[in-house]
Length: 72
Image (tube, rainbow, N blue to C red; front, side, top):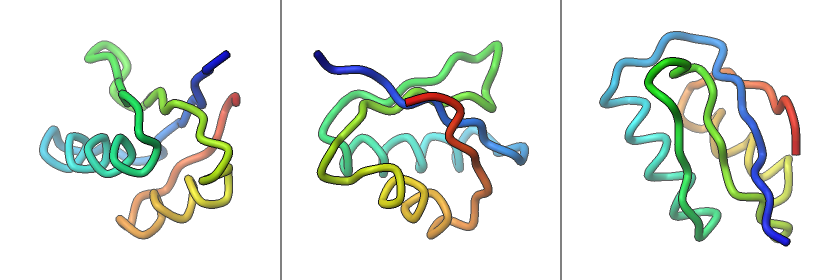
């Protein structure tokens, strides 16, 4: 069963930067990454066992963005 990893973005991102991050993570995970406009600091990323938690966080950090994994 596919499940999502919940990321908490620790800084305010403008829409363009958030969309760029979502696009990058979608490509890396091979799935649909989504966020809700009411809570733009939360991003749901499909779990990809080949990428793993460390790979996911490395991808986020490579964009200069601070985040924490809340649940996976």
